[in-house]
Length: 244
Image 1: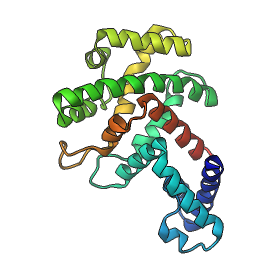
Image 2: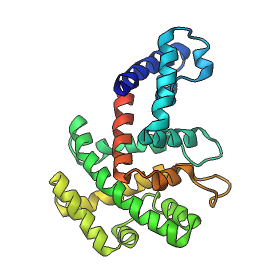
Image 3: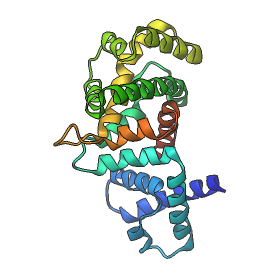
């Protein structure tokens, strides 16, 4: 039942996005539809559509959002992107979606399938090490780490410092076992993948106060959901919807 409501809400959101932005560009249509997909229909939009299917979509969408930690994580990202006081932008989310094609992991669906186990491994380890730093050094310290590592041009030494040598070697082996990629290739990929993930986590940073709570990072660390599952399933949902 939840899956049917989820699918119905997706199609209704796409239809509403096309209707409301009749003469807007495709990017604005996708942006509106994407937001409605994860929020359920907004009350203001439902006012324009008295059809019962839109009303039921709104109710089921809100219910799914409340219960599904993956959708809640994505909604937190979307809220930060929309908030002018936060550092996030649409490029932070599109960076994750474009990552599969930017890496030497194949083409199309094959590239996406190869990226998902990498996200699964990295998400779990990032959640662990960042959570430990938050506990030991505080919120400001972990947010600074995320900001520092969200910049392009980081090297393997910075990643070894983040994870520790033993954990770093272990996650390389884990990625190799799950993907079949050799360790040399993986070490070449990580300095490209980690900044994209950190950029996404940094999207909730406050523009004027870097030490203010970051809702995206806090959700990633404190949701009780495995970090690998959060990143992998968020990637799947976002890429599936935006490719329709």
